[in-house]
Image 1 (cartoon, rainbow, N blue to C red):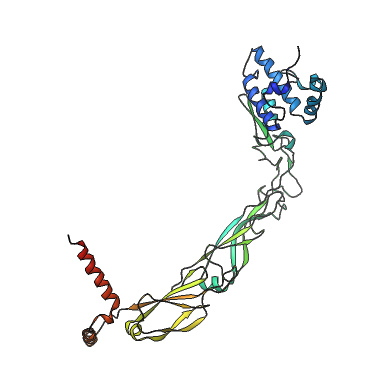
Image 2 (cartoon, rainbow, N blue to C red; image 1 turned 60 degrees about the horizontal axis):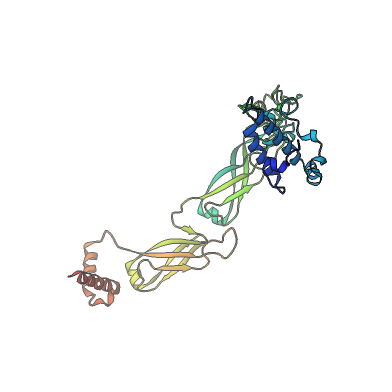
Length: 377
């Protein structure tokens, strides 16, 4: 009896990709495998046919020969080993076809200890505003895992070495049978390294790393802001089995300042002034991070007015121009007045004839009056 076309058997086109061929075979194997269809000769024959087609089309050389010469171009016995002796069980088939899903194909499971990069660490560093703006150098102590100097990171007692894992025989992977599936997973004994330590180091207890407090000097560049990070390469946890160390990330937190607040490159502060200074004008000292400067207050200044002092802010760590200092004046109401001071204020109030002295109050009162008039029916 002539054989059916292999592409027709799997139900794929002649230009099907390797992934499409594998997917098609998986579908047919799930449906017709004898483990799922005991005593069903028809299902067994369909499985043999699908398996033979897959083994030809999944091999690039055999597929090329088949495409050129048809069944005559391939060894009829090469693909059909069949179900039974030499044909492979359901778990064998699925271990080969879907090994990449459960941890890689068998050919990729080499033995030997694998190197792992150490974990990254984070350290929260709190700075004053002055330190963040001007830059500083600080010493920090970081708890971390470092390579054990007793065993040089091997985890084995001096003079001994790790042995091949007897569970996975150095592959680092084991297969587990779950029903008709064969699942490949990391070896639970050696955790994927392929090696076990029978005589562990007394200092690190076989871990290859020990906990230590490491003192580091951190140079904080001028202009850093709250939330910025400084990366110290290789200052994280030590790697395993000769792997590289991780990095240390220093997270900057800037404490709240009693006078200034920061908005990117600008600084801001409130400047309280008396109502006399606000009315008549004057000059007062204003603090900056570089020292005191004079701020001229013009006559008739209103509360909340902003004054900009150019170049008295911050230069960002990323470069650019220096920001400004924004001063917001707040007219302060006097407290704890004497009887005579109250009397003088009353005389001053009585002397203010007309609306020209309080233009905002007059405008506001006019608006309130119109509001109530509009509400009348």
